[in-house]
Figure 1: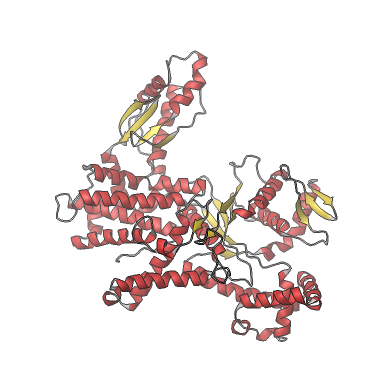
Figure 2: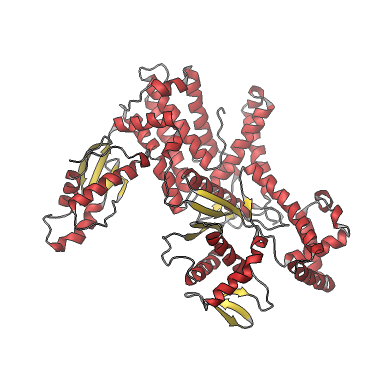
Length: 590
């Protein structure tokens, strides 16, 4: 019987390591079926189960096999399984599931190794080297509102998980910095400030109001409208005076966005719509040379199978539009930035647009026909943020909710709750401020990330700031409590990591140990499915497993103190990595 040494490549990923073992066993059991992938998943009766026997039986039963049914195939898979220190035992259940119980010693050793070598040794390895995540993408001269919250938060978490999984991520802010609205903004700017050089943020004041006033002029004053339309032509033609005014408006807007990103601790590199302008004509030319672009009612369009309206790429007046920019940006990302995976985050309302231009790109031969093969594209759509009335979340005056107002309120409410608990007497004003911010912003992010992104969610400060249940506040408390247990032991945890050993003799210790080891495969699955809520669910269950462990196993002052302190530390480390991936700042006391 072959013996396989633990595979370094999948340290801390039992599912992958078991797949490697069953790969060998499958080759030995059914040598004539070479392309069978091991089907491993967390088990109902063991720690994991291998589900290949039933599928294999349906393939081989007509081929004169010696097996008498799926359970016999399962038995043969167990018999051919290389011996490994990770597997305690295997058994057959039901119609042929192979249940696998992991060795408690091996789980303990894996956790000890992580404590010495660091949590990054548990990072999953994805098959892709470079990805673009296109997220947030607000419009210039408009304020960021609650609608940008989901794109920004979900995009940042996907980027963080991919980066942790050793993928080079190009975080792209595809801001709306081009288009017909700039005509009216520039003309309005010229009217208010004939000397554009002297224009400052303070002079323009609220950019949102500036936008509304210019829109009002545009709608009510035909002469102004005419000027604004001329301004668009001049701007797009490269007139330096108009370009300068445009750059000024963009700069003021950009500074406003930067403040929000700084508060959310989100990093982005701006490559707005205007960046792709110089490439559009050549891209349309390439698509035309492939016979994809046709004339249609004066415009130039691409007919896409399965859609009853064509994708317009050049308007009848010769101007370009969203589709021309998006196709060009995709071309640039594939050819210039050499990205293998391009992920777009917008609300589900834009799904059809993305599906159309993805299909056009496949037709052009830029992407493979199979949407699982690289280079690949994904539209990560998400539902709306709803108010208590189950409609789109708005203010009482029926205005869109500004993102800065939400952040302010989250922090203020979080601070008020801390003061109510007397923390202003215990902590310095700086500590109070930092912790209120970490908890407030964390609560806002977690409430968004924990729901499956495809559904909307009802925005409620009371729910997200609740310290019980599946909330960031509860999880941050749980982390702070673990830190306090370690502090109260008076032990040097870094010394213990080097010398101490972990034993998982109690059922609650083993359950916690196993859950810790399932971190890497959870991150991997959240990346491949593009569903961050999987990581939230993992983190919440981790805190639940820890509570069971702590209720059943005395830590400080017990005979097993060293082992249990190390389990506390491993839990805190995994929690902190989850917080980091979710963009939440951990707190060490609460």
